[in-house]
Image 1: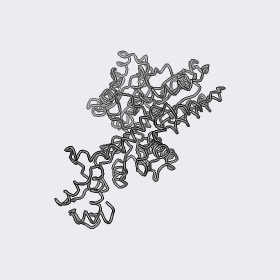
Image 2: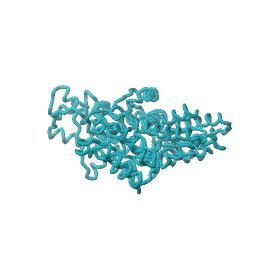
Image 3: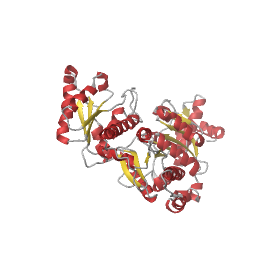
Image 4: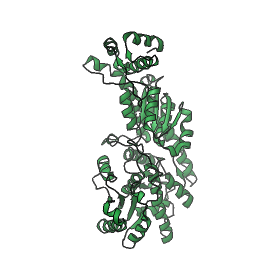
Length: 508
């Protein structure tokens, strides 16, 4: 645990609640004090779902602290069992209520005696894992519970489908453009002649889980959630899985070829090379656009990438391999996935950064001064302070990441969306100087090459007038470099002479 006013990934109970609220007819009981019960509001606002979020808070208050929680928690579980008639109730504490060290498994055992629904306690360490790790573990736990239950009751359906089929694992509530990605993933499998057996957990019933073995293989589009469940199904039922994210033309080809290799082991003779060539040439506009005269303007441009493992790794490869952009550094806040991420991106960038400290990321961006940023909402705010354009490519999510329009990041339509994002991120900033011609104003306030340090530096009226003559799209960089030069010589006032001297010596 740590005290922070910004986190890239939320606390563990958020991950558990995201999984529970993704399933159909599953209810979650959150054992938490007031202040931890914001999930319902957050999900209702972001997802724009017409249904109520199936989460009930069992509030820890002074009466609970005096008498203990068992009676209140058990009553809440049995009450919701009668009112909602769910198939499953998931009980989760928060990191705050975990301090009480109560025997919640005993609460579950007691409530199970009075309830029709299955009841489980989320098996995550709320002090040691974050939202993403908890969602991955909770999904695995639920799938494990129902697979073992089906084996015990001899209801597990192991007969493979006649035609190639797949389970898509890891599309869930509050995912970054997950619903848009799912449309393109469905289209991809339809084009390949592969039937979708089940999509887990999004809008799935827990009773569907006994049918998972009918599929020929499992597909995990995002590393953050679903990988543990896929590995369990591989170990328990010998079900192969593919975890190559189809983001970008190169990764789509790798993903489809892996699918072809996997289903060939079941006797399929499908060859998808012609399909890949046709899609690349005629469906995805990104392939030819990256070779067009427009994209030649991006030659020599620099960028940095930061986000979750899945999106940051894929975006780094797209920028470097498909768009020819120099990636100064690429990073992820998924510190637990360090080895995979380093192996995946090290060949496409100059440096790999593994951290969940947003202050460090802000300072690195200010120090390296890229032409564009591709990161999370936090990097977008950092970019606005530094006057560097930013394209958002990863969670944590914001209302902007739940557009009513169709904006996938995966699949062939996703390649077009990404190409637009990249091109617009680099070029739109170059038109800022038009604001000067039509009555705009400069609001950029940049002091040093770090965001966390503070300095007292000012500009003389003559230097300020000279600075305002510089076009807006480069003014921020000129101001930044001039102030750095002044500070090197212990000058807290930028004069016209210092400005000219900085231009000569550092090519400002």
